[in-house]
Amino acid sequence: MSRLELVVLVASLLLLAFIVEVVRRRRLSEGYALLWIAVGVGVLLLGVLRPLVDRLSRLVGVSYGANLVFAVAIVFLVVVCVNLSMHVSRLEEKVQTLAEEVALLHGPRAGTAPGATDATPTAPVEPVDTTSSVGDDDPGL
Amino acid sequence: MLDHLDADVLVVDDGSTDDTVRRAVAAGAIVLSHPFNLGVGAALRTGFRFARDRGYPVAVQIDADGQHEVADAKRLVEAVTEGGADLVVGSRFSAGYEVGTLRRLSMRMLSRRVSRYVGVPISDTTSGFRAFSARAIARFASAYPTAYLSDTVEALLLAGDLGFTVNELSVQMHARQGGQPSSNSLRITYHFARLWLVLGLHRFRRPMHRTEERVEGPA
Image (cartoon, rainbow over all chains, first blue to last red):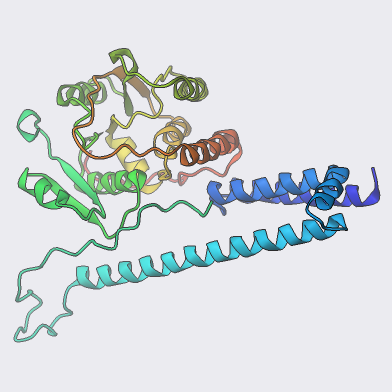
């Protein structure tokens, strides 16, 4: 086992241990954990199966094996980032909707309803529109 | 349905865009609406909170698409009120519930795992037809796994952690009267991988429930 293989092995095991630990502490949802465990196992395999990486890189026309790994890693990380951005966007939308719902639930603040001195609403409360339905809330996979 | 059951019916509208709310209200149900779709587990937790705040002594989780029998709901409730159970699962298996080979194998695996953990044989761990005692309502209202499959399977492990008396009864199962079944093989694979991780790590994880007992309302 070369020194590089050993370093990759240790790094991937550290990643796996860290992921398991944050799941154990309930700081990371299991869905995302699954993604990062897959990454950890993938890195581990790449480190151990370097001849395979070299052969694969020659096959796709990359002269140096590590370059292929870099290229794949960058593409993967970009995909994850875009996915997380989409997820955050959806969360922002949901938080806004929630805040609006809370405001409506509180009702008009005392004395601010038109023509009313007490806090009773002057108009019947209308049902809240629930058209902002999102199909699922699975983490991006 | 309301006519056959001496109970209040709560419908949790999980961000629906059809006329679910109107029809549920027309049928005489109490309706709570989520501002957007959150999934079955979240709807269930909303139900637990409602039941806890109103001080209901028993709660039944039942499918809205008519797959479950109201008479069975009564039996589940009795298992709580007279049988002294905290969580009663309605099992679909002895009633000729047909599933594919792969699904049957995974369900058997889940059954073994859960049964060993709670110390009682539970054959149908993913059944969404259950009854809960006031104690279960109170604890589940404050902490309950809401992810798909966790809301049924992991909840049983949580019940084990909390020292609940868990039980299982055979129930009837009908074809759904409406709505689409939610299945997609890639999605199911992901959910089972996720569940596998949950089950594998469960006993090592920080407990989901808060350790202090919550002050309860009338029970």
